[in-house]
Length: 214
Length: 214
DNA sequence: CTGTGATCATACCGATCGGTTCGATCTTCT
DNA sequence: AGAAGATCGAACCGATCGGTATGATCACAG
Image (tube, rainbow over all chains, first blue to last red):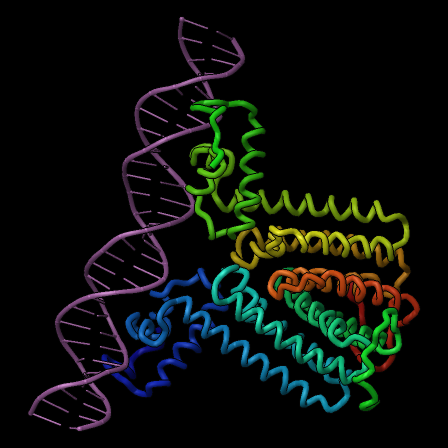
């Protein structure tokens, strides 16, 4: 309603500006309403763009959604990296920072779960699934790095546990209305990282990672 | 394919039999294809039932889905109760049994994630959301009971951590293709239950009081 | 035997969807 | 000035959707 007036009929403006403007609005609406919850017509009307323009920049609604999710995954990765970097060198502080950021996100009024996993769930086949897989892979890498520098026995397994806690907390915050999910998950993750160092129930430790700080 | 012949035109058969037959087929198809992935027409064709019959037993597709999900939640609750009961009296064995059952489920070729959470994600508003909330509540109760009998300091928080691990493992098994998710989650849950007993509420590190009896 | 009601197959309805096309308009480059 | 191209608004398309209506068929209770 408050949108169009500065662009009356034909306005090339910036070649890339239109694309990013479309992406920004699509990111918000596809997240709030779901992939099938909003049609291309309403999408275009809200962003003040004609269908033809949208279909020239992105070939289809699916491709638009894919681009939106990929950009979101990139942004989240940057976000987590920054939060980790800002937490100093201690892997425990870094892990706490990841879950603190999670809790802050869960508290936002527009929170509706993870957009990427939601999309992959809505269209169980299709582009969103691949984006989700890559997204989880990259988030796991961050946690593996933290676990490795905490000198745990099995960094990959420990990181998987922390990723399960992180993902589960987001699900619980969304579908269970549990605002504390990230906080209790943080305590669990820290406890796991603590016990995974000394406690060694399994053999075959690779001895490589060790003795950085502490 | 193997459609029916024993029911040519009009056949009351059993009043409740038709309803449960519809529920059984709808459970399978709505799970495999998603709520919006299959239409009422194909649904009826597959189950060998006319639209009119379906709409007399269930007033709408949404109500059908709600009934399907409610029945599934009940069945899962029974299933988990049985697994716990069969594991004896030790809460650690009971917790392990829950995650072992989870891992067996993840290994099934038809596994597509949790049908209830999937549905609640697909239609973020609507009946599925309420079913999901109740479902998580009841699953949490099971874990609270286990944590309580393990004499942990804060059974509710510990149970929430285990529920996050359980839910997150299912997400990872589905979207990350991680067949071991339930196994590593089980070890994390057992470790948490172990450390949550002796470990008294932490001093200093986090000022926020617990009081999480929600 | 007769009526009641469950069922089937099919056709139909209005709405919505993703996507295309068209003519007009405006900017920018040559 | 003129060509090129981006954009708009709106009409249009075929398909699909959830849901309803119809008329005939069968089982079963009275």
